[in-house]
Amino acid sequence: MKPFRLAFFLAGAAALTAGLSACLREPDYSTTPEISFNSIQLIRVPPKVRGGVTLDSIRVTINYQDGDGDLGIDDVQGTGVYSRNKPDGTPNKFYNNYFIEPYLLDRATRQYVSLASLGIITQGIFNSGFPRPIKDANKRAAPIKGTLTFALLGQDVGGLIAQPGRALRFEVSIADRALRVSNTIVTDTVRINKR
Image (cartoon, rainbow, N blue to C red; front, side, top):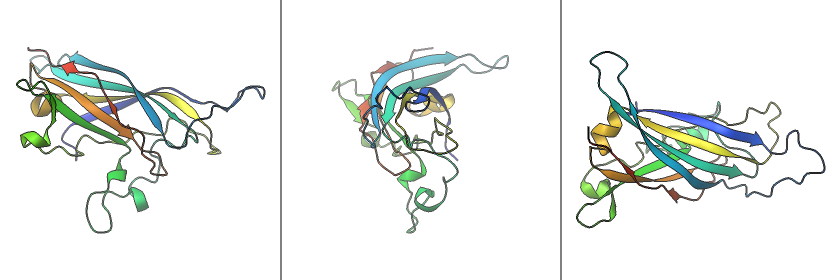
């Protein structure tokens, strides 16, 4: 079980060829997913019960496009090349399709450093899976584009990487169902407010 809760929000996803007039040209996107940075927000989540703890949520939004639309995990997760572990028992990166790594701003050097360099092992623990943005009954390959928002929720943000006063950013990439990995983007900086 992952040591945090997370959520995904898909917006603006559209099969660009479906329903378009024959006179419109289909976009020429690569079949390897391409992503770009959209936004990063820190949202303070009030307690749900009286006396509860206020939590922080960091929401990372990226833009994506893919030439054949084979994004998102479906019923194959956990089997074959998408199994949790490889045949030798080592973790399989492609159990997930959303890869995110946090980097903290070192106050002394003013450089971003990986948590591993600080002795905190997080390699892959924030990775997750996002669902198919388009549920196409005939599963016809078609270009798609849209936005994808990943939310790290709750005490796990504050307790593990986002102590008050810290500044951090993330490296993000995604994979399609053919295991083609997108480019890697770097988010802007988000600062954790002091309580």
